[in-house]
Image 1: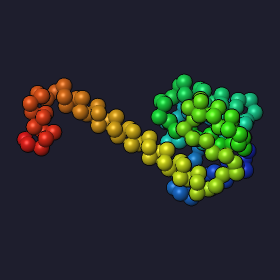
Image 2: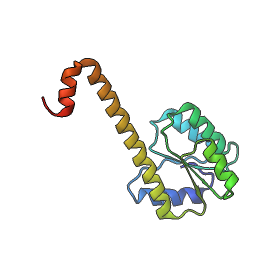
Image 3: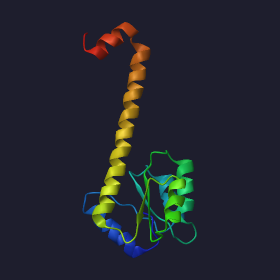
Image 4: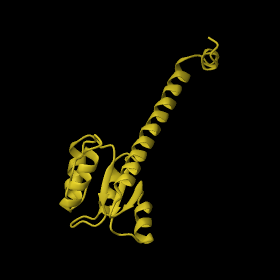
Amino acid sequence: SVDDDPVNQMVIAALFEAEGWTVHQALDGFEALSFMANNPSPDVVLLDVMMPGMSGYEVLQVLRRDYPPDLPVIMISAKVSVEDKVAGFNMFCTDYQTKPVEKDELLARVNTQVVLRYMNEAVVEQRLNQEVLRRLIPRSVLHRVMAGTT
């Protein structure tokens, strides 16, 4: 969770930790990017838009440049205009949640993004496995295996 407001951080931590999540917190974009550079990629990033020093949009640009595109980044902001939301989506945020957040809605959004990420990873892995099989096993044998007639 990246937010310069400690109260927002406490709310997010309490909400997700109660659901069994591990929550890492950063109070600004620089701290968030430092964490990302020195730790395994998180399942999801919750990113405030308005922060001093480096905006959430600027952090998002770095995340999209330096990390896999399937990393879910959910912008969370008091900025509720359509233009603000579109700006986030144009920079490829995965979702945009306005403040104050509805706890159940935010949990549902995060769970959905994480499940979609893992489903996508499973599809990619399956395709890679099929490609390996295609290259290693003669085509006639592969067709019989895939058809279930070994």
